[in-house]
Image (tube, rainbow, N blue to C red; front, side, top):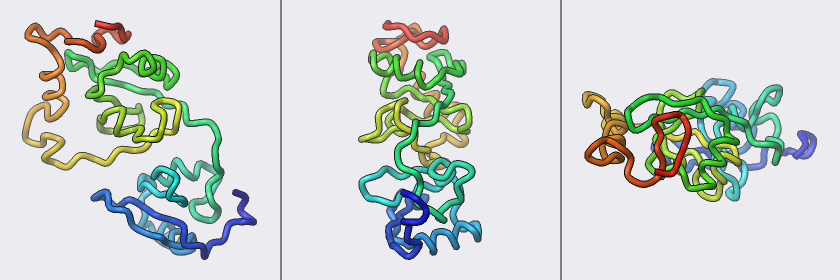
Length: 190
């Protein structure tokens, strides 16, 4: 939608608070004021229509757009991210393009529990965390998953959920059981 047809007073904005609770509806002018006063972090998931997924502010308003001064432009090509994943031996693999990851996903070569991240992210999550329904994995713009709590992240527990994932993914010999072999940087049906 063009900036000229965007009404700053329209109460159409929602955001997801850190606990995953939907907040809103708020006007664009209120969101703009909160953002200017640094009360809304750039990684906060927002949307201007209930038919859309929550998207981080920085992804919804790429430069030169200024957040909440205009409604974000609809459509557009999804961002081409670079992805990394942790293989069954705990080694970081990648980066791989969104196109490569999409191929592996379409061929069902990525386990649902695979821990991956964009090269710009600091923590790992699953494909479903990055692409909740109705988003299409690696073809839609990825969401930024919520940061895990200290308990979920395994603080004080060496390895945390990633170690549990790796321990639960392999067989007795540590080789993958079903899904893909993720040790060589190339996905292959096991």
